[in-house]
Image (cartoon, rainbow, N blue to C red; front, side, top):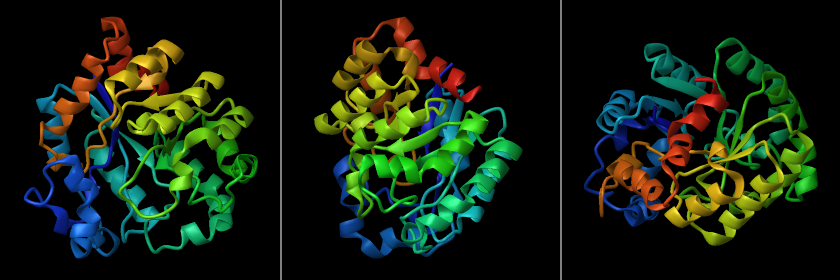
Length: 306
């Protein structure tokens, strides 16, 4: 069974048909700069779900299950989570939800008031993970939760969140590598996560994108995972070489398949479609058939209890 662990099938309606503007990864990275008004609709328009298109892609490429997350938008955190819940309610056998907890990609102010977010985190986690059955906290980084930059201080400020996740044995996804979004790149070097993982060993932490193909960030992600058995990696935007090294270093049982499918990434088709590229790096990594089974599905099934 193939499981996709990294997808964002939500976006503004104005970005429904942008295939003429995004064909390659470089087009996507430059989208914010070349089309600022269209890009900024993600901050002004309520999200719509692209679940039908996403499920069609899953069927096309033989993906049985997927974890879905929202993205920054004009919607409140609660509204985003409600929209995730509505989608997984329609497709409970195919999709699992990862909750939104704060964001610094909107004008909500969470990034400017991390203390309030930390104080309310436990109730939100209890509701969405404990009551509604969400699988964990979706992709984020230190930015929404703290203004600290010292790893020890970051870890201590995240304590309310991590203690809540410990009770639920639920994962936290933290981004690594570059991003098309503005600001706070200093949280995308995952070396700070070592302090969090060490203090809260019962919380699975997924370092998404495992450095996103950048050697420096990959080395940070790999050493953090090597030192902490509760740290996992996903293959989104990585390279075959990095997958090979990660499997050799920490084992395929802590690596999962992801693509970053979204209303923008789905248009990438030059030199080849998104899913073709993502599967190709796993195949070209040279890992064994059994190791590939873990990366493509078995690790996710165990971690997320699918």
